[in-house]
Amino acid sequence: MIDALSILVLVVSHFVADFLLQSRGMATQKSKSWRVLFEHGSINMFVVFLGMLLLSGGHFSRDAATTALVISGINAVVHMAIDKTLWLLYAVSVIVRTPEIPRHKLEKDWKYWEDWWFYTFLGFDQLLHVATLILLYNFLR
Image (cartoon, rainbow, N blue to C red; front, side):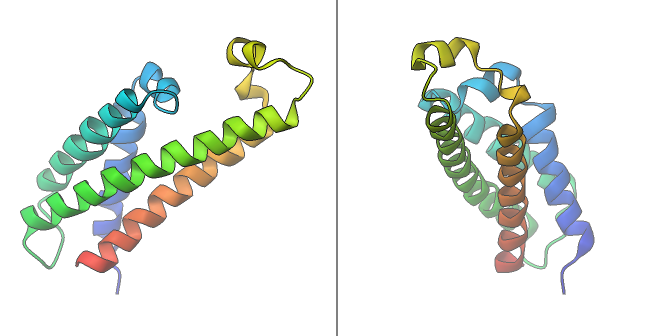
């Protein structure tokens, strides 16, 4: 049986790390720069996540600190893989869907906020992140 409070702690931790504490610069650059992606994964998705899990009191059946460390570490790696892969696929989809626009113009002129597919990819990104958290919880409790 899934403990709803533990899942809520994981999802809230994800929200804080991935939205509230992620700068706009990091959000826009992590798909282009390995350094920024690593910063996002190590700071936001590992350190912040670990701190939030430890502060929550560890609603897990195993040792709380060890479980929080393992969940945070695996989540950070999987999170970075999802972010890099999914947003690379989105960029490719833009190039494929707009062959009439030169790539150098796409870089500076693309209005992603007007693209329905951007929000579809964003929603799928979040679905994958939450599914990761639920699977991690189930494997590690």
